[in-house]
Structure formats: structure tokens, C-alpha cells
Length: 302
Image (cartoon, rainbow, N blue to C red; front, side, top):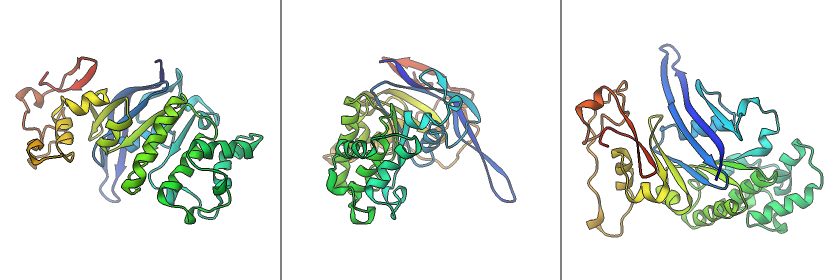
């Protein structure tokens, strides 16, 4: 598979504070590719930079440093046509769907923006692809369940037949009973040739649907590789910590948690240095990036 989206050295600096200005790197030197027909996931705790990366790819934020290319072209060189190629599914469908609009109007809106004809047929087709039928056309979001709302959001995302969907925590606002169905939809879209950037903190979702995964912590990419390999045999101590927090079938399967000292060192070359019980003296001065069996790990242990 060839690369559809290429992210190189992506960094984003935010300045916060009213009286005392404080600068925070939400992303620092992040690089990855998303291939055609692939589900690629970015995973990490809240504040790791996942959503910021998604916003840059959607052109909702501009990077401080680095570049993002779509089909070999800088994403900021595109005009409005970029929104036909790349669409989004957001975390909370209750907030992302206009409560005053009917389902037909919600799904039709991208077609109106781009002046597409034969809209009704395309709206109905998009709903069917999302697992809904014509009976939903005249309904409003308030009459739908959480899972149905998210399916409407997905229908809106696919109505223009994009090549990439950026899905930011698409199942976190849903009950457990709806999550599996939404994840299955992304697998179905992959078979149709649509790539997905799945932004999530849910490793079980990653294990279920993702082809590859990148692990972010404090804005830096610490591990990148095939999803099942990263989850079943994590290499970076932070990835090991994330996996150790997953529910297990029996207490005997629980892994020992990584120590969590409070002496955070923001200028450390490794953002996980302050929590890592395997840190080396070399970690104070620099971190090397190594390739192991098709995986990339930023860690001095290897």
C-alpha cells in the first residue's frame, strides 16, 4: 500500500495564561504515514497530543514546525477540495449534529457546499453505508440513540466519498452496546478503500480494528508499528504501562504497574523519564530511535 498521508516532524506550540504566559508543546517532532485503505490509530492518555494532530490534518490548526502531505502535496496548498478528500467524525454526536436539522439536511450539507447534484440519492446511499435506512431521513437528532447519531455523523462523513476519515474518539461518548457496531463500520469502510485515522485512548478498539498504531505521550511519538504486535508485545515502557492498565480475565494476568514518581522533568529528552522504572543514565542526555522488526521505538533500552 502506498502512503496517502505523510506527516513529517510535526510540532505544535501553544501559549496559554492571561498574565503569565506559558508555552506548551502539544506535539514535538511527530512523524508517521497513513496508507491507502488502512486504519491507522493514534493512542495515548488525555493531553498526549492526539487531537491536536487530528486538528492539523483537518487544517483546523496550523503546525508550528513540520509538514503534512496528502497524496504528495502540502495540505495547506489545497483549496476547498481538500474537504472532499478528508472528512471528520467527532467525539460527541450530540454536539456535532445540528439539533434543528433533519437527518436528510445534516447528511446533505456537504453536498450543498460542493455543489453536488443528485443529492437525495447520495444521501440515502450514505445512510445505508452507515447502517441506517430511509426511515431516518425526516427524523431529528434528539429522537435518535447515541449510536444512531454517530451513524448519521459517519454518513455525513462518507457522503462525498472521501479518501481519509479523521475519527476523534468516535466511540467514547457511546454505551458499550453501540461501540462494537461503530468500529465495525470503520472496518467496512476500509474494505471500500477509505482510510481512517482513529484517534482514541481505547486500546481494545485499536486491537479490534487498527492495522498500525502510533503511541503518543506528552506530544512525542514513542512507539509505532503493527497494532497487534504493539499491544501484545509492547516495547516502550510507556506502551507497557498503557497495556498494563487493560482489564484482564483473571487477577493472575495483571502486569506490574510502572512506578510513578512525581519529579517531572519537562526538559528531559524522554517525556516518560520521570515515570519510567527502567530509565538509564543515558536517558538524561538523549534518546535514540531504533527499528525493531518493522517497529519504531524511541528508547535507549534497545
